[in-house]
Image (cartoon, rainbow, N blue to C red; front, side, top):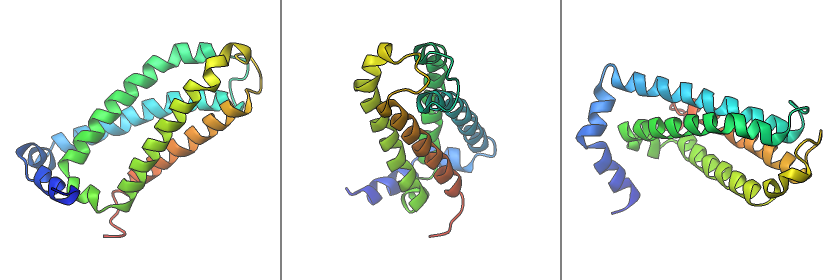
Length: 165
C-alpha cells in the first residue's frame, strides 16, 4: 500500500468523516490548534529571542528555560494532537497541498535544530548563561528556530487556499 492509498483509506474511516462533517467538532479542533500554536510560539519565540540576543538580555537563559519550557511543551503537545486530528479529517486534501508538505518539512527541521542545540551548545549553558550575546551556535539555533516556526505558521495558513490543486 502506497501513501496515497493509505490516505484514501484513512479519509474513508468513520472518525475522519465525523470530524470533517461535524458542524462544531472541526471548528473547535481548528480553533484549539490555532490557540495552542500561539501559546507554543509565544513561549518558544521568547526563548529564541533571548538566544539570538535580541530580547531579555538581562535574564539568564536557564531562568527563561525553567519558567517557560513547561508551558511551551504543553502548547506543543496540544498543538500536535489537534494538528493530527485536523490532518485526520482530510488526509487527501493535505496530501495534495504543497504547503502541507513544506510545513511538515519545516517541523522536522525545527525538531532537528532543537535536538542539535540541546545536544551541543546548551550542554555548556553555565559558561554563557548570563552573557548579553550568547555564543554563535545558540544565536544560530534561535534564529533558525524563529525562521522554521514562522514558516510552519505561514504554511499552515496557506494550506487553506487551494492555489495549486
